Length: 424
Ligand SMILES: Cc1ncc(COP(=O)(O)O)c(C=O)c1O
Image 1: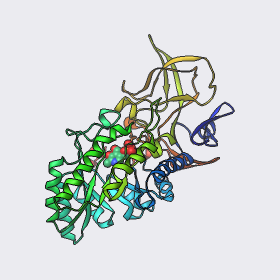
Image 2 (image 1 turned 90 degrees about the horizontal axis):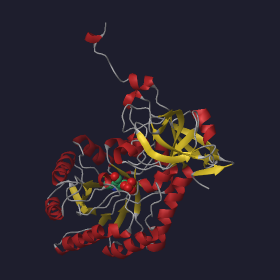
Image 3 (image 1 turned 90 degrees about the vertical axis):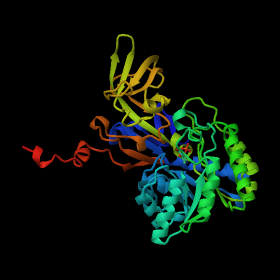
């Protein structure tokens, strides 16, 4: 069994007990299952292989904003994955993890001069352009250095896709992408440019998209724009259809990947282009857990609090998106049920992981996990309240490695300087 599982009454990740990790690495700690990441990649690529002819298989570019630890990147690279990046930092990570630039695609609404220079210098597969001024800037820089960049224009299809308004990216009032009419303008502009080679379109409507029907209007819009561009004499040889595949946080009905793949085969494959997809959360989300220890059981006037040692600086999603994470005790898993508010130690009321959560009765010192924390977890962590970020740990079978150590307060303070005039 991959990922979180119970053995002899104790929660494990793969074959490593979480009590062992807590004893050896401390808490809080992020723990990822290599086997689960592999099996997610396999599930997605198998669904695509089943539905789509071999010579039309999409290039899967892992959206590494979800979890950009070098070890996770190297694991996905070893499986044959490409990479989607959104910053110069992620480019550097991708290259450090050994990705061939030719399988890296770059998105992002605010690419700076220096980022564009780095993307052009690395000669990545394509730049997904989010605005016409960005197209001009890429062309200017590419012309200056004698480069030519393959670009696609990110179409904003004006549809709502994500599972929460803050992770929906394809509505016309969202900052992402280019409206349909401006896509034609962009194509016309690009045709006149020396520094860009326009090859197609991209789209990404949001995250946690649960049904094929939710993708449908966006993909149909994409197909109709492709047709219209071709009617105008433009070449469209590449389509990047984004990510957004959902994972289990609670008891959601998940996207039927087979139906999705079949549908890509019906709507996108006939457009006869290279196809790229950008799965993020799906590959890593359920593979990760945040291990934490109960500091106090606090009886409030009207509520019982579990004050744990993980906080919103470690896992921001509940505070940012009111996100639900399953929570389970590591031991004593069949104790009588109690109702708790589960909170961190940070000085914000928003530092609350869950209210009115029923859990087996817990005591000070007990361990618990926040589940499905492998995506948009560590990578959003901060040093708020001068808390060092937790370690990241990768489990493989019955062994584990710390793939990023716990950050100490010294690590944080060493970057700060008191000006001479303030030193006594
Ligand atoms: C352009 C783009 N592609 C892919 C993704 C990955 O989305 P997900 O993790 O839901 O698959 C995102 C997420 O924000 C994105 O902005």
